[in-house]
Image (cartoon, rainbow, N blue to C red; front, side, top):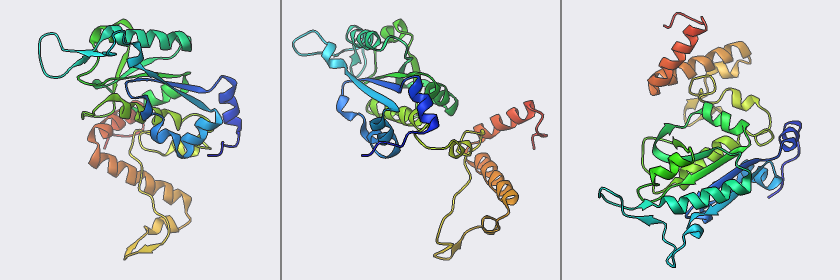
Length: 258
């Protein structure tokens, strides 16, 4: 895997140090996973960002390296012990200087948004706690001020896949990883809308043709069409986003809300 060519943006990122990701997990071999491939992998190899894993089980002190126990109050499953997780978090904070926000991936967290991704990507990095079993004892989350984040209204086997999702969303915004910034500007959520549909060659595929406006060469008409398509998709698929978009537009005096 070859390292990316340095860019002006990449040099600025390097000037403040690479963006840093730390994953606290029972399964460190799950990282970097997909983030070791493609542009994210090239950026990792090139030093635009770094990834460190912390094996939580290494901080268990009994001979069986126990990291979980039965929940108080009864119920199914097991809960990750606060003392073991605390030692792992404290060790990671000591080695990183304590400047990274601690995020716990959980279905009960606040939804991950592009705004939060931008904030994390603009900072020094993130420390991600990956839960397993029924989750992590709430006391250790409270003690360390962990931010609880969810990647969707569904349940995964553990926090590692969710952590990779969040890291991927952040890494691609690091200057130099994706090249120019123009590609970000029209992506879903950047303007409060879903992205418009895309087309490429062949122009006629199995009787399905590319919309004529995209072949016109008229950039103003193309921009207007793409905007219409983005608005239509958002209205149909994400009425919650559409409502927020209209409210934001009205606050800016940008329309009548129709």
